[in-house]
Length: 289
Ligand code: ARG
Image 1: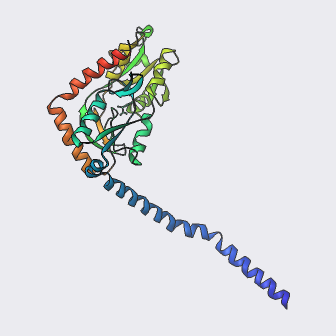
Image 2: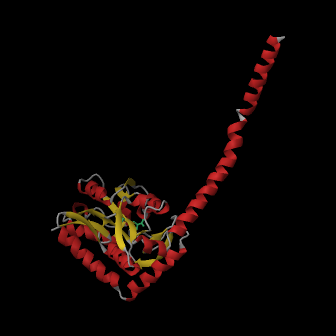
Image 3: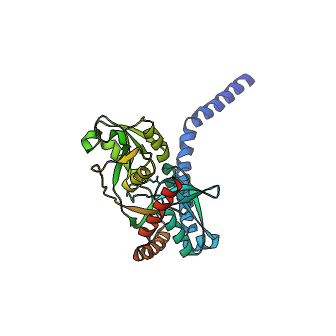
């Protein structure tokens, strides 16, 4: 009798266990996901609200994310034995910080990490020669500068690469996560090498591991100016639907976007960008002599 009771009890426990266990995780998982999603949207709403112009002002600093491998937009020079990030994008960053009456902090990282950093609240804005591509998960300011894309090659290849068709069978480099990567992917018969930094690509080009690098034309020209063995192909040029550079702001943060637009209006009215481009080019050439 005792034994039967025991077996019945064991069976009951086992039944309860098998009945629960396969279902339990799924039953629990669903509401959990819902809660998690809710949490996330709450968090991002909070982060957006956190990042009002008022909050940036009371924090006393504007944190700007960039990828400083892109002269004359943003690049590093050695000043008094220390690395300094300069360029016309950084002049714009400084102007925006000044207008807001706050300090400027620049966070330098690979281009592909910038929008993630913006999303997670690592920086307030991103200024990195970024095209306002609607597929990017960000708000964009109005454009402050226009440029097309071109190819940087070794001078010794001058006669081999003159027009678009000459790129067939070639090995080209692009920076990960850029519009240029998309351009490269659409080219027929081209082998593509995607790397995190333009500086890595320049090295690959100079050591003939690749035949060319696609980048914004002013950047290609900057590199050609300071590397005598490199040149820009005149007759290869791409425009894009989303021409120009804009400041990226966290998706949904319309208040900060409107503030940045107002400041860019002032910059454009005074034609400051042209002046900053000249200064940036001088700094780049000076630093590389
Ligand atoms: N304009 C291109 C884009 O938006 C490339 C920008 C690369 N910028 C840089 N700082 N490396 O995708």
